[in-house]
Amino acid sequence: MITKIRRYLVCAALVFATGCSGGTGVETSPLLGLTTTLREAVRQSMSGPTNPGFDPATSVTAVQAANYPGRTWVAHLEERQAWGTLALLGQNRDVLTYLTEDAISISLRRGVLVATRGLGDDVLVANPNPTLRALNNRGQSTYTRRVTFLDGTSQRVTVQLNCTMRRVGQERITIAQTTRGSDRYSETCAAENRTIQNTFWTANGNTVLLKTRQWVSEDVGYLDTYLMKP
Image (cartoon, rainbow, N blue to C red):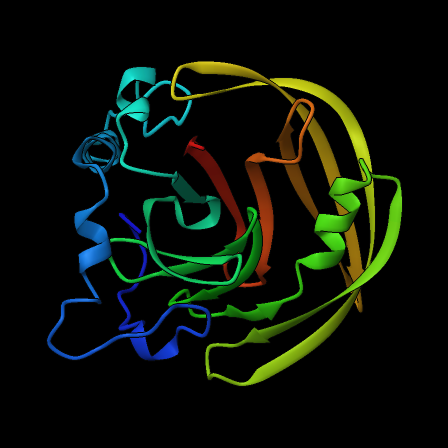
């Protein structure tokens, strides 16, 4: 991501990407397809001591977003004060793996977090299916999820989360100067001595995720994602 994130070589660690091949530029070529306007909007908004910072609601215009070459997300790590643009790196069935400019990878299934690499304390793999089923059922669901983390020493820790999904209500959200109606859902999960709360905003009338706030790990905190172009 753009600020305050350590750089990592991510290719060998990606478990959901299509893979890397020598001499073809696969490691960096996905970034070439990401529109320059979004990258520059993030860079400019994060530079300078008096700059208010990147705002997904207003920093990119609707016209700019419409001209992006494909589905485009931006991601935010609040605890690290970091914004990053996501470029599609690979696809394994319906799991899409995106890469930031400084080699952080985020894997999503229909917007629900599946894995991260390069953040230090990462999600090795999380099962998104119970969450997606709950969203499809419009909330009011109780279920379990299994998440395996990688700590800073690459040790695996598997946790079973006991979760409840509920529909909070309707909310209008603005992304790229376009305001849409959304349904807001709250997923509360408990495990051991921690309770986490993920939030999902779906477009009215369907389950397309427009915005999310999802827990990554103790060290990383929450990851916010915004769909700039569906």
